Image (cartoon, rainbow, N blue to C red; front, side, top):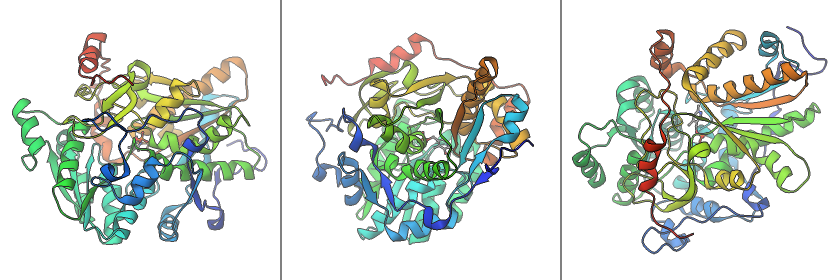
Length: 459
Ligand SMILES: *Cc1c(COP(=O)(O)O)cnc(C)c1O
């Protein structure tokens, strides 16, 4: 392995170099992300309306688009210390394999039992629920990482945790479910008979394997109909991007320490939380006109919210009981093809990232799943880490950029987010190895059905 002088394979920060505040990108945005709207009145959701669903402090964070730095409570920092700082790795072995002049770095968030970056926000959300004296929280989970992370955080703080898990994942990933139950969570396959909205969806679509939007509806109903419970969400919301800024802040500190400046910053995008977190401090510089970077969001070609979606107000859930968010969306009725294996299946996208993309601060690419698994395998064989399929979307784009550098001879510095590990995704890997994986790209007609269901909002 050819190593550059002074740049170690892994860069770890000291504990006292870890961030003490989260950074709120919205404070530096000239055009703020559009507010959440009440679906009945189409007026911006107020603090009082939101606090029936979310914890008070999290509502404050959700609505705050002016405070740049928000202190991380000491208790959350203590929890972070159990698994952070996460390493920033120089992908020397991948560079050598690709024979690229590019310098590749990745921030690895998979070094905790939940296996992803989701724990960064789970502990924050559970902490504020606990502090408010609540009994517990409800949530949805798709692939299972968020439910696992939240179960861990709730176990640590002694909170009850009710997880609605998309039925197809519940059946395909029984071990994820058992991890959650080990941490004391109750796990219900969604749609279920336990909620009104679940029963309604089951009646309309018998045999459905569920979707994230549908599980969200059930979890929200469970929170609002149980005394002492609130709903929490693992992605999409402004508050989640805020908590995930810890990823970018650590990365920036580590890079500054070694005088490294990224040219291109890449992240996979499901609801946008890891990407939003990773780019935060760098995007802040770009928004303030201090520096320029290329930011690339990578999404599955089978669920292409940024690259083929509409920038419009839409529901975050299938049951249409949640507030409306303005975002790049495929419509709340969109459900990715069942042969899509790689996660990142939410129909919408963070409002903050949507606004930044709309304003030209960010690019997006869509990649097909077999090429994603090819990248995952190539990466695993040289860098050793078995990546989550979601993370492998970012690997795909990073390799593609590195190969472009090989053609042009440019020594660009590429940074990407390696959000998690793929131990629970072996069914998808198996499909890939057996040659049974297909690439399904929705047609314009498929997408039109989703767009036809967009609410008519003139904003
Ligand atoms: C949830 C998840 C994602 C996608 O969610 P974002 O909110 O877009 O970050 C990506 N990678 C892993 C490992 C995840 O668990």
